[in-house]
Length: 235
Image (tube, rainbow, N blue to C red):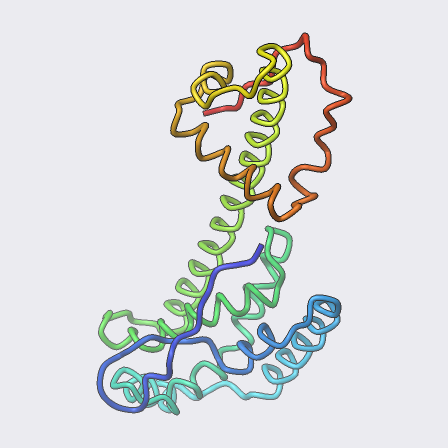
């Protein structure tokens, strides 16, 4: 799932700090992917980013200090130069997390957000070493995205389980009562609150409306044991 980062408008070279966005090249790489060719597009975009990182020389200490100072006042050109010079670091940290649930290109996009914020906030934070500070910010942004993706996957799995439990219980009660069960009856059978039952019912109804095969196709009424009890869903 991916997930999890939104670009903002250019802040310009003066005025307030505004919303920040990742380097435009990374944004384009994510936006222009077609579903049928996403993997190939990712590989091409990632290869291009690696080439760019390898061809960009590191900044000398004095030059970096000057650019960071200018970036702290909203100078976009200075910010972009520091970001470009540190793209290799972002890629390195992304590759180290490649097996943690998000594609490397998405991790690079997330990491670039952390890098931009590091560039903008370094002067006012009083940190002694920009490189160490930037690595912490980039790593923290990536780790937050990984955690958010893992939580979203867990939530989706629980919701699919709840929808399955609801469907089975609805069918069981219809068979037992010879009529559609009420919301309260389904809630009592599942040992859920009425609010929870109502929410899951809405999810199931929406899935039915959209013919969501991923959620509902595996529920086969003919295979249901009407004498059994529906499985419980962890709270």
